[in-house]
Image 1 (tube, rainbow, N blue to C red):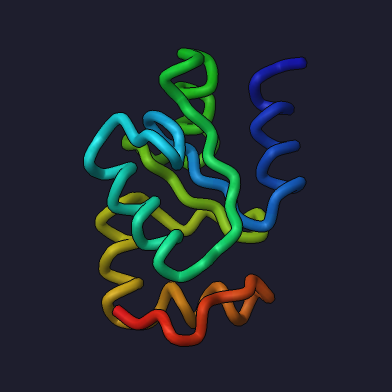
Image 2 (cartoon, helix red, strand yellow):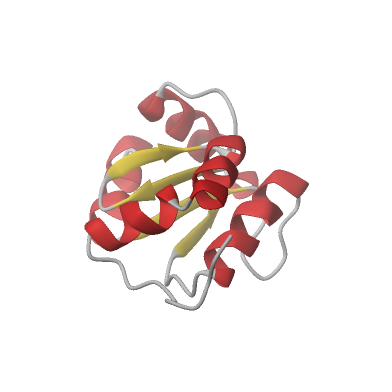
Length: 112
């Protein structure tokens, strides 16, 4: 399977996908770790994909999103952004609103 097809299948097959360095249990960079903390705080169920395991995956996701950095968060097939964008959206309550609007369960007691 071509990497583009793998990426497409993961994005379409999971409501929330985080392309990151490391795993949700063991992030390998601070930026990936911050996004994991935010998603965990919100109680969001998501799939983490470790781009360090595959150069093809790392380069393929950057090409798909036309975004140069990792991590990258996708919600219901839509590219949301990287660490800075996710953090700013979370602090403003916009990430929670986006997740709810797209039908992704969020821990209601979780606030910025």
